[in-house]
Image (cartoon, rainbow, N blue to C red; front, side, top):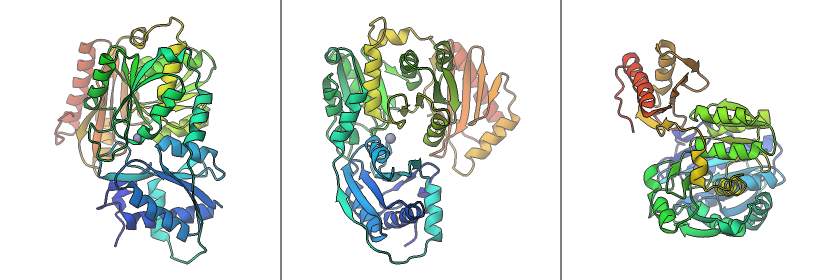
Length: 458
Ligand SMILES: [Zn+2]
């Protein structure tokens, strides 16, 4: 059997079970990780999995192969990705691996890896597999460990919500792994909790656990309204992203709720705040107004984490809903923790407003969600390079990740997706007309420069 190379990506490993990623492949991956660990003098590693149906069997093969390769393994069982990151931040070797399909369809799975406090790229693991020689070594040992209580205690020590019992929150886990921890977390910080789809079920029988898509938020919106809740929070399949619904049932994009979080954090400490190229100009302006340093980074886990680390930033966030708190937390992305910080910021708001009214205090603008055009993995970067070289768009240009053009009345972005064969676009304007004009200028330039692309925005 051969290992399918397409599953090894810049930030992680992802594939369809069992065609691309299966027990055989994951044993090979484990052996490669063991080689890396030995090079870095790492003797033991913690492992876990999300709630997917293939998780248990993949984790079992993964553990067996690590042990056979002489690595001591601590199995923390079914957890969210942030719980695994927490374990990796607090264990002796600062290393941990989770088997997770994140928000992808239910037959997908993958791995997110941290060794020696650093994220590991899928590409590195592939090159280790290709250069590996098999030799027998002494066996490692297997332990099991339940980290939930330790994690919850630290979260609760970190969060201080004023009058927490005043807040009624609906949490929608979409039957993903967040169900194993989020209900307890919000009850223990003292909120009134309404639970939606908190039983972990890898069939995802209610809606897909991806809060970046509006269709997955409808149940949460209905529940917030019918329960007269103060807010609604939705988490993705492995619990590292958060989506926000206001008391009036409105979906708030991450770059907007980051304005509230930035204001709250910068009222206590000064420092930098990192956000990806898909975020609003108004976020950068608000950070500057509050005496913070706005730092725009390319989209993707790796870039955001690196920029946070290099600048010792207080907070980082992406339009996809990955929010990284580094002011009084460890700097990894954690959906339920971020949700609790949103409630903390709400409770500390100087005018004691509800979340819908707080959102109205920020500059009003009109923006599209993330839009996609299907292309291929082979041509996506060429299309972007050609677009950057040949476009005749006016405005202030930024090419840290694709092309972002800032105008007086808004901005537009065209970049290649890191993870799928797609172009990613987003537009914002001070009025709907501004937004539409910027979008049509970008699209007409794209069809002029690459006439073969079928522009069908999804
Ligand atoms: Zn995720």
